[in-house]
Length: 279
Image (cartoon, rainbow, N blue to C red; front, side):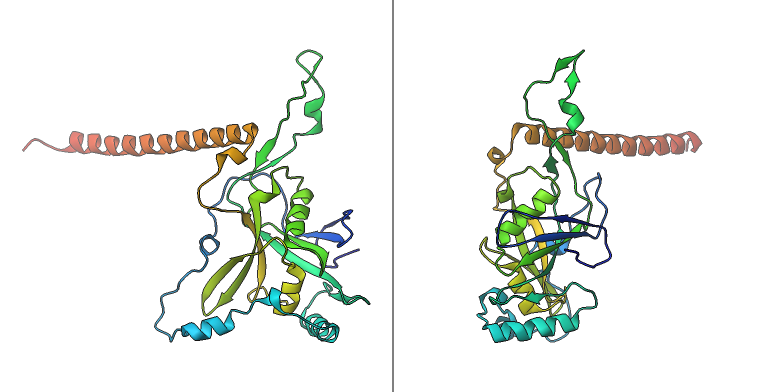
């Protein structure tokens, strides 16, 4: 099935009977250095200093609609699907099934600050060390996903958030534990950005239908599943070794910059001393 978005697509089907996936990429994949994370998404909201009248606590509470808890009848779903399809400018339509379920597209943005692990290239399993076959040691390659990577997913109204996470990781052949990641709902209201973590059993397509197609009203973001302190025991040995190498490179670069800065200052002071005449 094609998403019709004009992007390069790869179709993937899963054995899970509740949904079918179609991928559309909005960015090219590849290796890159770690970028500064979006400060808006690091907090549950970003306050904005303004002299305009701010909404009262009651107004904010009234506006915080829990899309996923809305119980809709088949006729209401049919009406919302029609309204949704009338608002979009592409062919990423939703379709209602006879049993009351529906299918459609969601867009998930990746906001990961740590590298992900993928299997090594197949050639690494070939003979090594003068013809000796490599041992069965598991090896991984870690890299940062490009900033602002996003994927379109064709899912069912029965597809749950945890299934979406697993499907996204499978698309990139990420071998990290899926529980290291979480799906978030991002919304903008009164100049503030709100971020809410979805429960594993929430249904993203229902959120999309109830909120409408606007990305400002609601967008979906994949982030690390932050629980406070980093649980280093959850990482494998290759991952920990890779993190140590990254820290070492960052430390060496930081030391190099400091040494260069002091060297330039010393050079300027030496030049100033040489050019001055004794008083």
